[in-house]
Image 1 (spheres, one colour):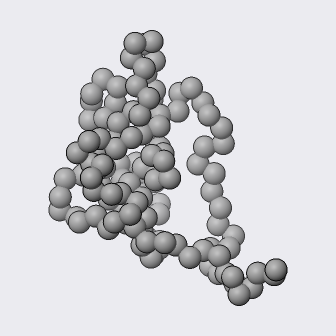
Image 2 (cartoon, rainbow, N blue to C red; image 1 turned 60 degrees about the vertical axis):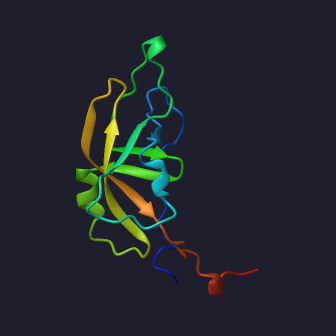
Length: 127
């Protein structure tokens, strides 16, 4: 039995108009988050609202966890709770969220999965 067999999480149950979906900024996108291990000591990863709608006066709040495609960005409190897990190919990399008013919120971390995570135990599966 694999140690991941009983671990499942749902980040967002359904769409909510207040949900902030993040996108990498132009300066962060070439770093290939989710595909390559990031080098510590460089600038943080920057994310912004992927669906800015200032024309309609909509501002989406910043919370403790956000999504960028299949990548998760979490705040310091959540990082403290998971930083001791040893997961191969996962790094917690410093990040900044830029809100709809161009204010920079640091204290965030991107969960960078730069390696494939083998989480199914194929030997114990029945066909």
